[in-house]
Length: 482
Image (cartoon, rainbow, N blue to C red):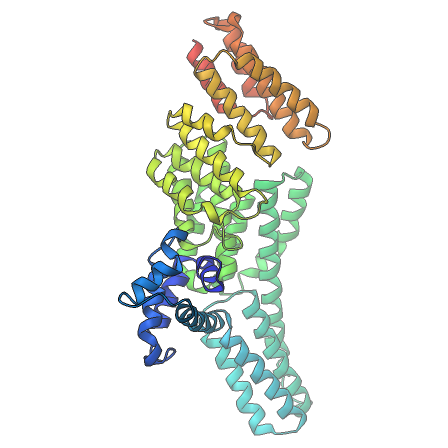
């Protein structure tokens, strides 16, 4: 069954979507009672194997036995039932992903245009009222909502211009209000997106950051005119990113996000949670260890909410962060289950097996199962960055176990970095790995053992190096030498 369209679609769903699908299939409104019992049974068989969806449990013969325990296996019968269930799944997806309010809004705007052209004034008036009612019933106040609000007010402006050319304000103030609100929220969201990129991913110059902030500051004074949950939340996100070292803005942003959660679109919620996660990682990486529990809880909560998924899977960097945080929190069983459950849902890479094996080795290494870790590291990694990271982990294990081949392996690592430095590695990775191996050689040097002056110089050198791999591990090794 694993190669079927039905299984591929269900596996791609997150837990919340599968729960909603279960309710959908149980509903007699959507599924005819004559088909319902078998479809419920079939879906229950599939859903029971979540989240791993192990192929052995979903073989057609085994599923058929569960559905028809006293009958001979019939591939045709099972596949017909799977086809019917897939049709219902497609209907469910259509209902879930079809923005019904927006569809009605577009339909009503088209009707209003027709009534306007045909001069059916009474019908036009009632249609415009219905358009305003649709917008008022929406709970989400994202950019799309504000854009539609502007379009509707602009439609009213056109109507007023046709029939009331000599009196009134022609609805221009309302149109301008909604246009400004749409523009300001859009500008605020994109500014936060770029500022977060500067803060957490690709550092910009001080001049670039300052220019971006100064462009937004005058507009923030206008935002107070709008009593909008989305604008309030993004204003707080902007203040957080503007003053990254002030913890009060982080706490205020969390409060605002909880208070106005229903007003956020799925896209906004995902973006804001990413800002919060990166804020925590930023401070933890700066040495503020108190952020560890908060960072772990944010990742764990966002995983459960489905906010970490990209193309229905987890990116390698997300897997790595989850494993690292879980190990630091000593949640060893949770980390093992996580890696097992998402082994076949690693996305954003051509080599998902590399990601699984490396993180499995990391778990074993950090839980003192170093011989087993070496077994996973003996695998031929395809991704060069994971291949190098695996070689570094091998060196750390050989150092910790005082293996005889450590010196030869360090020489081989140095040669490997040199050979690939120009064609496959960027300058930062070259520098970081060269600094790692050079420092490891100095630590291994017999002159360094129990030599306070040499140890102090080494410690200072590592602390001052901005680009060095395995910095924490190297400092730990130096401490052990005292």
